[in-house]
Amino acid sequence: MAKKINVYQVAYKNLLRKKTRTALTILGIGLSAWVLISLLGFNRGYEAALNKDIDNMGFQVLVTAKGCPYEAATLMLKGGTGLRYMKESILADILKHKEVERLTPQLMAAIFDPNKGESGGINAYLGVEPATFPAMKSYLKFKQGAWFTDPNAMEAVMGYEAAELEQREVGDKVMIPEKNVELKVVGVLARSGTADDGTIFVPLKSVQKIFDKEGLITAAGIKVYKDANMAELENKLYDLPDVQVVSMAQVKNTIMSLVSTAKVMVFSIALIAILIAMLGVINTILMSVLERYQEIGIIKSMGAMPWDVFRMIWTETIILCLLGGAIGIGIAFALSKITDVLIRRLLPYTPTGSLIAIDSRLGFITLGVVLGIGLISGIYPAWRAARVRPLESIRSEGD
Amino acid sequence: MAPAVNAPIAPLGLNARNLRKIYKRGAEEIVAVDDVSLTISKGEFVSFIGPSGSGKTTLINILGCLDNATSGSLEIGGRTVFSAKKCLSESDLTKIRRQVFGYIFQKFYLVPTLTVYENVILPFAFFKKPEAEADPMHILKFLGIDKRIDHRPSELSGGEMQRVAIARALINKPEILLADEPTGNLDTKRSGEIGEILKNLNEKEGLTVLLVTHNPSLAKIAHRTISLIDGRIAG
View 1 (cartoon, helix red, strand yellow):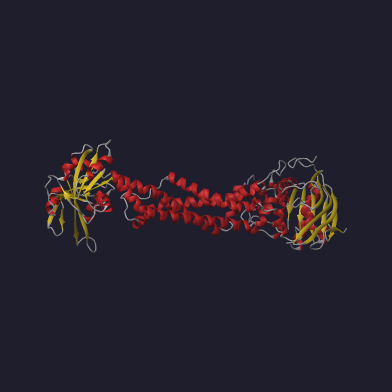
View 2: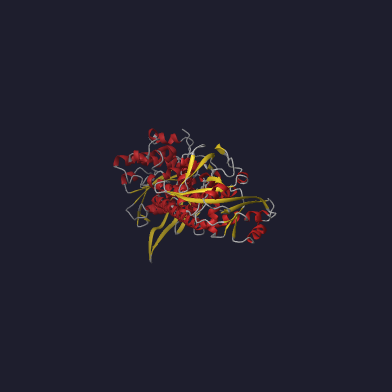
């Protein structure tokens, strides 16, 4: 038999002495790693999802009737209630500006549907212009059917989730409550991962007619030329009467400021979790050192130098942190969908894409952070162990 | 000039002169070892006997480089370990300890999560002398525990655990084996067995053995018995 032994094996086996304590410490570190990687993933995922939502709008500037900027931001991304209207004639004034490449008017109409869900709900219809809207939303693909056959047709194109919810297919009818108007479903969109999935699109003229809003629109989406000066265009648009101009950057900033409070809260929780895990590691390793005080003394009498003992105890800390970190990261990957749902409940607005963007790079970063914390936490117990003099342990046996 | 701490130590004995060890407990000074001079030759088996508090463990700790004396001098293999002019650091004492000594104590201090074999080769995790035992099974067979190598300490008897501790002390082929009450936790039969092992190690392997014991019959197996009373050699 030529089996060998090294400091790392000894350190690993030392951790098996008190299995429950070791397991609990690893669990504590794992939970901290889970919180940390989820937070880092959220930090990245939220912004990416928001950017994707904004990019998928197809336009960079939204002109709406004057009102609350937060409401405008919500309208821009999700559609909203408490709608304000502006005259359709404003489109000609907007088109005059040289920065404007394309323009599409929208009329959002919302109506209470008593048959929706358990206690009724709001049905929203977005009036869009068949000539301009599909060109701006070129990323939208059809699962079934196509866009409207006529700008005045009583037809609907349903987003993927809206069609699923209403159980509609091409050829089916959609009844608008109170108005007693039936729309024929001519298209069902494929899933896009954007707010369009939950929208029912209707020709603009039809929505204006059904809801008695002829000549009115709620918003106009503007696609600007690639090298256009956005700030200059915004200033010019503000010269128009009673409009509000919301740029993509503004929307993003508005929403990011709304979620920043939530982020600070989550960061604080992560910091507390990390501090608790650190204390847990220090406590576990220090307890272990004190329990093995005499044994460490004997190891030193065998020829172990202070650095050998320091390395042994430090290795124990590293093993705890690596195992805890790996478990926490594994949990974060496995439960990212659940974390996503929980965060959606906490935040005032959430984009449609995945909020938690965790990948292997983030996993390695988290593992690095956890390992760093472990190395720092392990310094004091390892130093205490390295300072043990063999005599101190032997003396306790009496003379 | 004294040789460097890392240099190999000549196979000679120990030479202690006027060793004193004073502990301070508040304002009170306790003289644990009082003016002890002795010479121990290589291959000698010396037992230290005396009542509790007589200073035998303190003396053997100084001789075994586990502690520095307050005054006096100690030479091992012709090299000055400490004197009035020289006091070694803990790190330097470690370097001497691992070159020269093997230690066994009343408690066995085996690592409970390691097997018998792993406990025996544990010193190799930290230091291995070039002349260290190439085949640990040789020692394990010599001590009659070669059939227990895969067992954990908790599965062994007290006598077997002390044999494992002896094997661990011998694995790096020390010059001197320092045994401080090695039979203190064992019954008479097991004590006799351990005494026999120490005698065999001295006679067959030529190992210098320093044995501290309360047990007069165990002390008798040594070539020489040094009796200590109140920190002084009484005979």
